[in-house]
Length: 116
Length: 111
Image 1 (cartoon, rainbow over the protein chains, first blue to last red):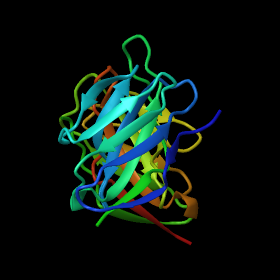
Image 2 (spheres, chains in turn brown, red; image 1 turned 120 degrees about the horizontal axis):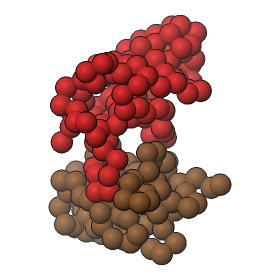
Image 3 (tube, chains in turn yellow, green; image 1 turned 135 degrees about the vertical axis):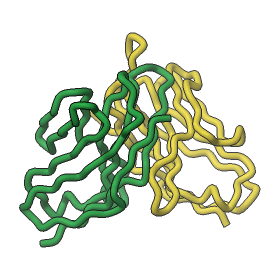
Image 4 (tube, rainbow over the protein chains, first blue to last red; image 1 turned 30 degrees about the vertical axis):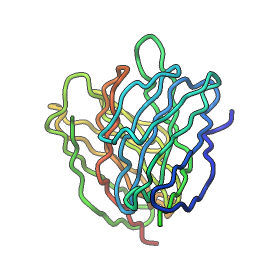
C-alpha cells in the first residue's frame, strides 16, 4: 500500500506567476483535501474533491482551484501568486462511501512554496 | 464552525505520561473528536478519534468528558519521538464537512 505523495517538494515562484502542485492519493482512496499551512500555524482547509467534483471549500479566493482525476490523483492550481501564498501545501486522502467520509485522513509530506 | 482550544505548548519528561487537554464547548452531537500530530518537516498523522466513549489504541488513549465539551489525549510513556505539534479537531462524518485545525499544542519531551 503506497502512501500519499506530493510533488514537487519545494518550489520558488515570483509574484503574479501561476503554480500547479500535484498529489497522488493513497491506493483506494476517492477523496482528497488540500490545506495551506503558513509557518507556525495549523493547516487551513482550502477545498476537498470527491469523485472528481469539488465537495467543500474553505475561505480561499477563486484563484485557488483544483482538479481530481479518474485515478484519484489531484492538482492544486494557484493563479496570480501573492507573497502571502508562501506556505506548505498539504494534501490528504481518505475513503468516502455511502455518504460518509472516511474517519481518517492520510497526509502527504507537503510542497513548500516560496513566492518572491 | 466548531472550534477547539488547546494550550500553545507543554513539556514532558521522557518515559512519563503526558495529558494533552482540548476544550470544545461548541461541539455538536454528530462531531467526532480527532487528534492528529505533526512531526517536524512532515505532514500531520492520525493519532486517535472518538465520539463519546474513551478510546485506546497502540499510540495513545483518548478520554472524553461526559458532556463532551472537553477531551484529553494521553500518551502513556512519552518518548523523544513524540515531540510534535498535537491538533485536536472536531469532525462531522458527513460528505462536505470541513476539517478545521487550530494552532495545536507543541509538545516538548525532555530526555
